[in-house]
Image (tube, rainbow, N blue to C red):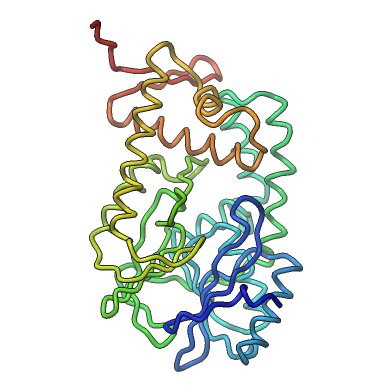
Length: 336
C-alpha cells in the first residue's frame, strides 16, 4: 500500500479513500477510544476501497471487530457509501443526523415511501423544467443510477440527537448541524482543544457544492451561509475536512466562502438584467458547455440554489409558463 494513504496527526489518523475525478479522494478519519475504534466517513464503496480498508486496518494493527462506531457527517456517497459494508463486518453502530438519514433514504430508496429511482426521476424532471436539453437529459439516468453501487448495502442508522454531545474516539464532541451542502450535515467540534471534523461544510481551497434538489431544502444557499456564520464563530485550532488536507485558518476560510457566494450572486444578477433566462442558460454561461454530466449536475444544482437566493432577497423573480421556468432581474439598470 502507498504510504501516502495513511497519515497520523496524533489526535487521529487519516486514510484517503479513492473517488472519482476531480476530487480523487475523500478523507476518512480513525480515532481509538475506550470501546474500540471510530471511523468517520468511510468513503464510497468500490472494490479498490474495500481492499484499501483491509490494508489500512492491517497497517494500524486492528481488526474489523474492533470498530465500535461509524460516524457520518452526511449522506453523500463519498462519505456514506461504505458504512453498511463496514457495519456488516464489524457490528458497529452507524451514527448520523435524522435529517441526513432521511435524505439518504429519499435519494437512494430503501423505504416503501420512497421507491428506488423516484429521486432520479424527480431530478431529471427538475432539470428539464429549468432548461436542460434532451441530449443532456438522456445522460442522466445511467449517471444517477450508478451511485447505488457506491452505497449498498445501506446501514442501520442510530440518530445523533440535536444539541447533545456525542462521545467517540475517547473525546467529547459537540455536533453542529448545518445545511446547504447536504441536509443534516454534521460537523463535530471539541471545545477543549478547538479541533473540528468539518466534513464538507468548510473545505480548504475549494468551495463545497451547494445544491437545490428535489424534496430537499427549499433555500439551500441561505442555509449554507447561515451555517458558515455559525461555524466561523467557533474557536477552531485545527480543521479536519472531508477533502484536501487539514488546515488551521478556519474562520478566515468561512469568511472567504461567504464572500465567494456574494460575488456569485452579484454575477448571476448581472446576467439576468438583459433578459429573463433559464437556470441552464445561466449555468452554461458561468461554467461553460463542455462539462461532463457529473460536473454539469453539480453546476446546475448550484446555479439553482443561487437563483432561488436572489429571488428570496427580492433581487430576481421566477416565472413559469407552461412547463418552462425562467428567472429575471428585479434591479433596473441605471442610466449613466
